Image 1 (cartoon, rainbow, N blue to C red):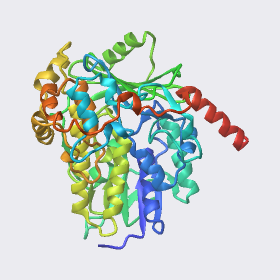
Image 2 (image 1 turned 135 degrees about the vertical axis):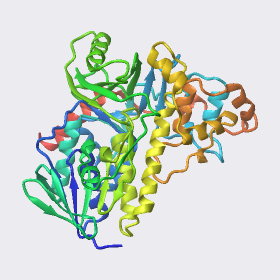
Image 3 (image 1 turned 90 degrees about the vertical axis):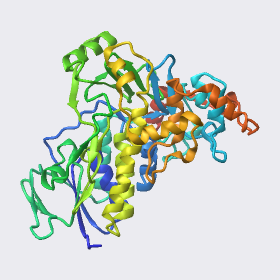
Image 4 (image 1 turned 180 degrees about the vertical axis):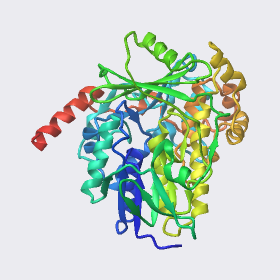
Length: 485
């Protein structure tokens, strides 16, 4: 244990601001500053979150509806997969009666698989429809979902204003170096136009990993042998005529593309493998798909993996500084939130090793789940042939799949304190990919078929509904009238 009276967050992107808000909510008496560079811009091409963003809002006292309005957000029910298999499917994480645990079983889902029901019956009735119940908007903290699509820039501006309103000092400076205490090996200060001393540093500097990597020398552990993609382009298109209630992930020739609705435009991107095509070819493929000229706003390459240690000396790396898988399932913001929740538990006791173990589990939980999406049967291009026949599985995912080949998944199969994904997330994906042996599942299901489960039609929440886009526009209009804008 040690005394920490002053903390600096390096990086003012969404990861840095979310980290600052969670830390302040946990330890309000500790002096906290955020140092952000004016030379690193945020491109608002759209991004989405997991349901853990709702946990962040509740923990930090952020009204969800206020955030939705200011961050130009839309509601998200899950991720819709098109072209990955012979029929579309949806990973929906608004847990309800279709995902209810009874004993050691998930009987509703097992019934769908055993009886080879359509993919859409894996989710509650109405979850694919672009509508939401009006009953959800009784106060500013109410929302029909806990996961959202954002305009990245608008979210960043909202989080920055929230930090400033709560007394978190935000300093504009570009940090380029650090001083190390020769006796302890800790970072004593960081250097930009000015020098800043602190007791502890949270590194949210993104892929540069300025403190944890360049200063302290913590090594990167690559998982590139387990994932086929390493490059992406991002671009915007016009606002949708009707907002999707999900992020759309469409399989393409050499990877997959995303489509994210926000309140005034649509965020898009293509994640691909540069061993098969380059950025120009990816750009051309997307123009062929969209039938129009597209202006690519951002390109990046990535090496999927994580740091060997997230917490080292007096520095804790969060977000892209600590790990990156790929954009599938939108885990970046969710991992920041879960990482910071883990950190706030271990920080008072300064339990470095225990925290690092849990952060590794968070990453493995994300990585295994994302990799499971590539258990495809399609082989219509050389890329997808390689994925189908040559994809190397992580030992932990292989262990799960070995269990599930002989029995239907149990809720307790995944053990991770700060997990993002649970067994109920896996089942719709594996079912959509035709991975299950339905006859074998049916033999098992007969022993629990007496368990009462709702009919798919009865999982619909009967109330007054409104189309997603119209609902967002009406809520924005009412908010402006009430606030006098």
